[in-house]
Amino acid sequence: MHGRGADRPSVNLLAEVFVRFLRLGCTSFGGPIAHLGYFRREFVARAAWLDDAAYTEIVALCSVLPGPTSSQVGIMIGARRAGPLGGLLAWLAFTTPSAIALGALGIFLRGASQGAYGSFPHGPRFEGALEGLAAAAAAVVLIAVVQLGRTILRTQLAGWIAALAFLLALGLDRFAPSFQWVALVAGGALGGFLGPAPAALPARAPALAVPRRTALIAGSAFVVLLVGLPIVALPGTYLDLFTTFYRAGSLVFGGGHVVLPFLQSLIGPAISERTFFAGYGAAQAVPGPLFTFSAFLGAAVRPLGGVVGALVALAGIFLPSFLLLAAVVPLWSALRQIPHAAKTLAGLNAAVVGLLAAVFVDPIATTLGRDPVGIAIALLALAALGWARLPAWLVVAAAAILGALVRSYALPSTL
Image 1 (spheres, helix red, strand yellow):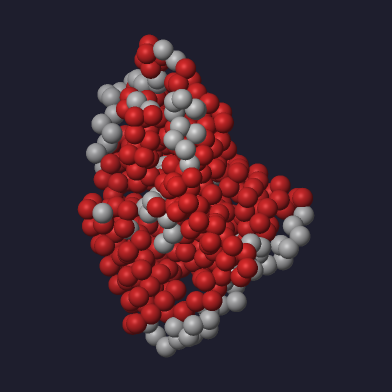
Image 2 (cartoon, helix red, strand yellow; image 1 turned 90 degrees about the vertical axis):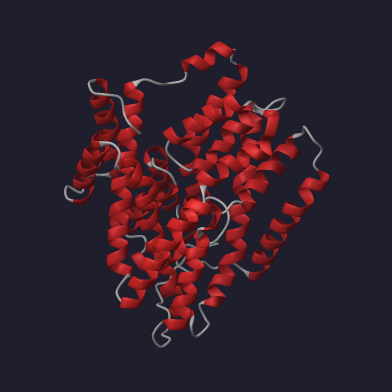
């Protein structure tokens, strides 16, 4: 994949991609939807690598694919900016910090005695820091929803589609969270059928040039690996471990929070329930994609595990995203040539706003609303980001410190 003007990206351009995504990988707390807010702030508002229309289109494409949406969006942005290597570096930089932290924890717990579990962090300061991080993430998501809404919801129909997607996403989150992509499909369909007369899609659209042969190879490899690996992988081998995580990355819709229980069912007795949930809790406390929880499981699983196990698990769970993006981007580009594509895309974009708003309401706002301290920190973070225009990483760090300080001298968190 390569973007406009990025056939031969310079070393400086590649370094810029890596550094920006590495900073996000160290500071993007709050889960997949919060990451989309951080990405918009970094690459639309600050760096101006793309506009809201292009960004929302990338989010729409990645939201209907299985796997980690925020990581896929990052890969697309990196590839659009600096070609295939830019996409790879964006993923590597965004993934590495949390993968190292969770992989190291998995290795520690794997070799520790039962008493070592008692050293896992707790207490009011730790809980307060987590509360501050969640509050800062809430502010980031709210700003992203409002600003995207102003840009995308310019017609009455777009507003109705966003409202419908909002309600549909809330219902699906409660009863069928892995099918939230249905809200996007419904929005696209409504836009295609009810939108105004077809118009040409803007030239600024974020099309990535993927040769059809490459797309065909990637799509074929995705299917062959998904079907063939379980047949050839011997139990208890690294290939079997890779197969387990490849299936998770290929079959899970709905992002990181959905993949965690799915992985527990796939891993089974190879990891104790106590160890699994220790890692589950740690995954909520680190920045970056939740799919790096695979590094913890790969490191902690017996009889393999260790550094090699962590690397195998990471490769297995993220490889499907690279293959799917390479296979689907040409189809997406072809769909843009259809006369009603602009109408359908407008409906998809409106549905993205509704989906983000639904996730802000539940679980972010509903969880935050039970705690006055969290609300206060979120309001301060909102002012710092929206009014003072402070960097997101600084606001996130300050919110964590403030949460820890407040909880050190106040009642325990209700979160």
